[in-house]
Image (cartoon, rainbow, N blue to C red; front, side, top):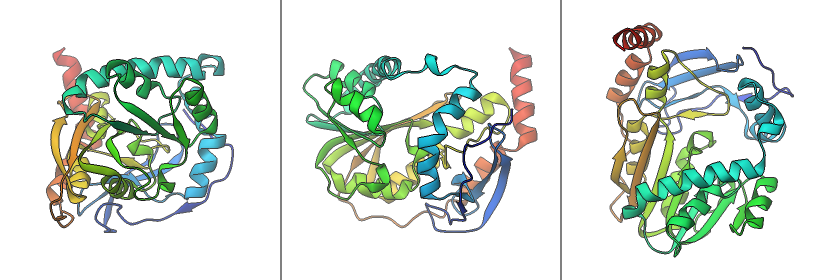
Length: 300
């Protein structure tokens, strides 16, 4: 499938967002939409990301003008099959499920969601834990307005625009959104400063290694500037002062679910995690991906 953007974006080269290095291996040069997207893996720490990537301004234009249409065309869906109400209903179901899963780790008080869309996930949390005070942060005014109409207090803002100490939260959640961020390290710094002591950071994100292994090929996408393994996600959390209290990353699952607790320990140095690079690079070898996929099909 070959799709096109509705505009000509500008691109920039970047260093590794986690360790600051600039020595990479190329994993692929096309994304799932058929766009010219080069994905690399850092040889120093194993972080996987698009490089070069669209500039921040081009990504903002992409989400305004191209994103929804690109997704719908890729999935062969008509615009009428997606609307705000359907999004809210599906997200509320997911939020209820996540609230039940994470309930023993959630602190009383406030819970803030980054990339809260129509507010469905927060509504699901509220339905399971009524005493929570819920706040959403969402860049789309249309989706934020819809969330507010449903009684979900939502601030219209990009995650990258958040200032330190904008709030004092007991919990922060980010569901299927951290791989869309332009600067994950800045997000972890912000989350640490915005949480109360022993506050919880709850993350659900696509497990890129597992996702590709299950499908037998590399599947990247321009709307995911970063792709996470469990190890790379934990590296980010721990290097920014968090302690992992839950790591749910079962083999074969498409998603990683992590709960990290804010601590007052001295921040460790960023890891030179060459083992993560070697492990991830081997798992993403195209021949090995295909072979393991076919072997699994044969065994079944």
